[in-house]
Length: 313
Image 1 (spheres, rainbow, N blue to C red):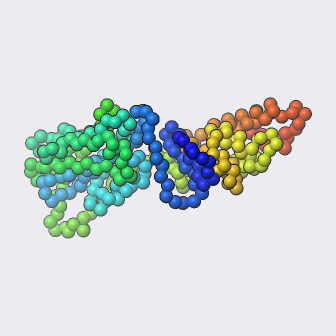
Image 2: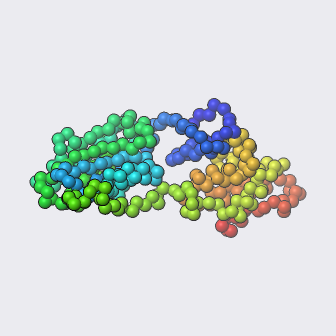
Image 3: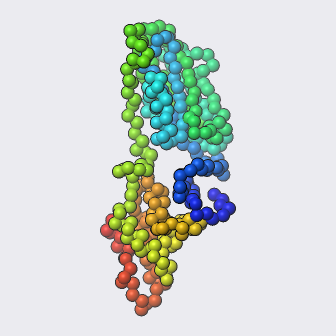
């Protein structure tokens, strides 16, 4: 990450698997970057949708490749609901590498003599540039299948999504295909329930499940490090111990620099929810200043964080 100048309006921190942006106000912002090696990975959530009912021999499978975020998935779910779509298999995660190779999506193992796939749709290829540089709109590939007889009411097949020279995922499709009742109007179609999709692998960023530093601990830390200290035991050292080494002007402009540093620390540890690293940083600060302080100088008035790990932090 390159930074031309310090600013007090925002702070941006790039981690190996996430980019954190702190802002003073709502607005429209653009984050622009490029991979520095072919080891860079874009996580794509792959989902397959279809309808449980149809009024012809044709049947369509719709394969979506989208960003691995709850919002992106919910948008697709909402669009599919409008057309009576059904999630046919639990979504899977594809690691799409920045190696310039394209994405291939194909339908395999279609039951012979019961179903056929229309010509030129069995395998579709999406160029690397379209996948890697796509906007927030999900990629959609449609596959047209046809039953030989209306008596066929089951469909089983596989959908293979793979990157050439990269990761592959196979989704197993098994679903019923029912005839639409002639007596029922289209707008009277029954609501089709979706599979319950668990996004527990995605960190909760809000609500009661979000990872938070206990309030009493947070208050104690802020009271200690927000106050200027002649020995340098202040929020700047707290930032340094948490690998925040640039654009400190942003934190200096906040009413409580330590609180903002802790906000960022919480966001960076949503996956593990482990307070040990913060406790270690506080202990290290204490040890550093024990060495710098004069042997005759008392530190009884300062909070002791050395026992914090035994007390929960």
